[in-house]
Amino acid sequence: MDDSKSIAPDAGSAPSPFGRHDTPADRWIKTVTWLVAAAIVIVAAYLGYSYYSDVRLRDTQSPSARAVANLAAIVSKSPNLAMARVRLAEAMMANGQQAEAITQLEAALKIEKDNSAALTDLGLIAMQRSEWVNAEAYWTKLVTILSTQEMAGQDQRLADVYYYLGTTFVEEKRYEEAVANLKESIKIKRDSSPVHYMLSVAYQRLSLQDMQEEELTIVLAFDPSQAQANYDMGLIKLKQGDVAGAAELFRISADLAPQGVDDPSKQLDLLGKAADHLAEAVRLQASDPTKALSEARIAAALEPTNVPAVRLAAQLWEVNKDPKRAQNAWERLIELAPGDVMATDAIKRLSANAK
Image (cartoon, rainbow, N blue to C red; front, side, top):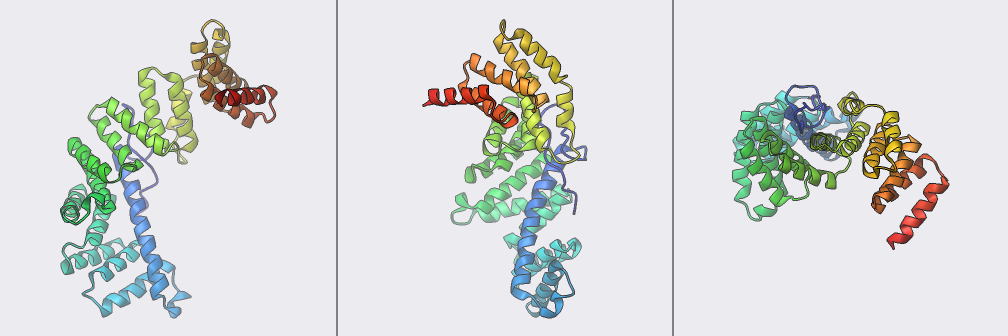
């Protein structure tokens, strides 16, 4: 149950660095679904501990083990309560008893065949185990159940189920069906960054780069610090010839990537040395300020603490008539060199002009 330490699928021709396996989407799904499942079982364990704690057990067992014992006692007294079995199963998951949890969830479904909580937990377990056919069956049944209920178009649970079903279809390489279900999720929950990200993956697999880029833009608007989305967008920018934009995205990704993930840094290394790009920016500063700006941005991305590179980029943003980005660069320079007179004056000037 620890196979969840990495994040998302790839965005370009290169495989994603954000994980250990060969199939990039495996990594994204296992992480996202297991985080959701973990949240479920942690809440369940907490409730079990809070409401059913036994003083005699408190001093000898872990909170999750105590929750299992307390909830097992409730199930023993009321074996036909489906939700009691579901809560026991969730506590068991928190306690590392997956096989026993599955038994309880299946028992709950024998009592209530349409119990959405039991179906959801079983679907998440199937995804965590990469049992995609089983997962599809659970999510498809839940769509049928939830979509016929009142106010289905506003049901956040249905949005999540469409997301999980779409993600499962990505794993099954049924990308058109994945897109259709992910779009259904977005109809209900439009601001869900994970859904837009998975939609970008489906579009990438369909070789629809423009649509992939559109979805990644939405993801980064919601969550600018999403390391994988920055990496994916960097690959797209690189393919489009925007090396400076790619460098900046790879820098964000490298700074935010999980420990052990070094592909964003490798992409930066492939761009050369900061000193060489800065020298080229200085050489082109008068004759070609647009190209010089690109070189200065690359230098600053390769070495974020390089004061001359950040200063030159700030100056060239002004020359290229982009005051907002110029001010951002000057503010970055102030962070690196507090009290810098040139940066302070520039920020005052740009702020005044913006009013």
